[in-house]
Image (cartoon, rainbow, N blue to C red; front, top):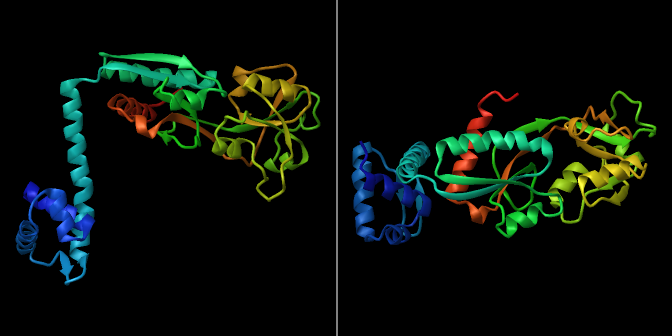
Length: 297
């Protein structure tokens, strides 16, 4: 068995590749670092580092040992963290939100599992809109949001929902009677735009500037909310690529949803501000990951 000091010294030196910085990091002398590494090399029977007066490099044996040890150490640290959390408990309040009615059922499944694991932590669930979803994460009024990927500038968790894309068009639109269409049709019709405050990455994904073949996509008017965007579609002001759940949650006699046969599916899951990665957030994301391993209707 390797001793803790041997593992810690070896991995720190493998990262720093400098005896002085390693000693400073570990708050020991360079002589102590050298002593531990030499002892470890004697036990293994081979050199772990190539040393010169100017450089320190891992040998192939050293690289293999580092690659093998890192996930094991990470696993042990994670196990210790989970045990610590179990003893302390996750308390306080976690504020979670959903964007779009169809994400609420998936969110509530995660909330249920999280609450089962951490009954002393209150979970506040609310809905946000396109206009304030990013602002709510930035100002701390919510901790986690279930929304579409990508979401620029935010940490992203596991995928909770996957859905096919369809094209929303007015009931009288020339494309309304098609069984399915290609993304290339976006070059031939104005595309209704999302609000300016919406994530740039999200807009590139949903309302791209170019079709897959490189044809420019004409921009239609901008809507302030999803319902307003669909109203612009119904008025014949443009078309709009959306998720197929819109059929169920936004059925309208003046809008049809035509399958996009060559579009990648939409993925949704938890997003949060990296700087707000509290223990409550970590446990919520872990619950989300565990939910994805279970069959979802």
